[in-house]
Figure (cartoon, protein in one colour):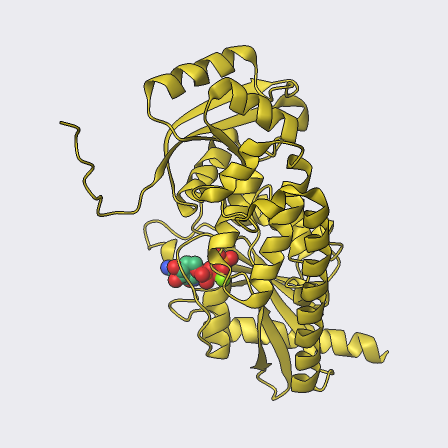
Amino acid sequence: MAKKRTHSTGPFREKAILVGVSVRSEGDYWALDDSLAELSELARAAGANPIDRVTQTMNKPSRTYIGKGKIEELQHKVKHTDVDVVIFDDELSPTQQKLLEDKLGVKVIDRTALIIDVFAQRARSREGRLQIELAQTEYLLPRLAGQWSHLERLGGGVGTRGPGETQIETDRRLVRRKLSRVKKDIAQVASQRHQQRLQRTGGDAKIVSLVGYTNAGKSALFNTITSSGVIERNQLFSTLDTTTRRLYLPSGTSATLSDTVGFVHKLPPILVAAFRATLEEALEADLLIQVVDISSPYAAEQAQVVTDQLTDMGIQDTPRILVLNKLDLVAGSAEEPLSLSVLDQVDVSQFSRVVTTSATKGWGLVDLRNAIEAQVGVIQVEEET
Ligand SMILES: Nc1nc2c(ncn2[C@@H]2O[C@H](COP(=O)(O)OP(=O)(O)OP(=O)(O)O)[C@@H](O)[C@H]2O)c(=O)[nH]1
Ligand SMILES: [Mg+2]
């Protein structure tokens, strides 16, 4: 008699093998193992269960991204374990992805698809959903060319919550039409948000924006400092929407403070572009507060990623305060005094001030307010002269 499938109690999690490649010529400051540790978290966030890793160091990725020997190693692993998906830590070209799928006989997705998938699961607001739809559609378009396997992937599971599950999506023309509609809708929502801010603040309040790596504690800081209730969670990409509140400063003046979407290593440019409207508060900010989780072993790398991404967005010259958050998790003792080693690795000259905080314990908030106040004051003086 055939074995009856029992209902599992937990959600079904696809088994995944992670693949990381270190390209010698690229000299990434992010170690391969660290990048894969993060990929593993992203995979879990998307609903997969990473069970194995394959790595390779090469001079230049090949047509199949990895070398022949590595493909054989993967084929062997796929054959001998019940793996559902192979996840690459970099963006694959549509051709590489297709070739790899043919050779491995399982679904192959890349870091971009994975991050888009995590975003898709988190998107709640209309603006968030529209922006993720834009990213998904942009990602899908070059992968459409008769590649049915890609479309079938839109059915469910990791990297698969597609822009729409209908077959209509197969038509490039329709996809393009959809792209322009989504872009129009996003523009409309963004303009409404802009209007609302002007109405709320009269347009003259200084804009202060929290930026930082995902899970650094931006929302936690935002909540304590403005007494708000933005979701703060120990997970990647809790926040996808911008929330803005008035921030009262010690001298009685006020500014607006915005909580924004977090950054991540190798954040797909497609997503940055799609989330441009959400990032508007950061783009237009008079002052950026860059939050770093100092308890993370990758604090310095994460700070660098954020600096690089701000540079890509063209806002590297906006005045910036460095906030070293989660101090409570690293606080030293008499025997072992606190060492903020991250400060040795970060170019602090980019920042006008450095403040240490613990958002959950409420430490350093007065310092932070004072730093904001002083900085906003400087901006105002500069504008008057
Ligand atoms: N111990 C400790 N935990 C903190 C601190 N600040 C934030 N956290 C926790 O860290 C996790 C992430 O915090 P969030 O505020 O959601 O982080 P975020 O930067 O907004 O993250 P994204 O929205 O995902 O980009 C949550 O579990 C917070 O409770 C802190 O100072 N100390
Ligand atoms: Mg957040």
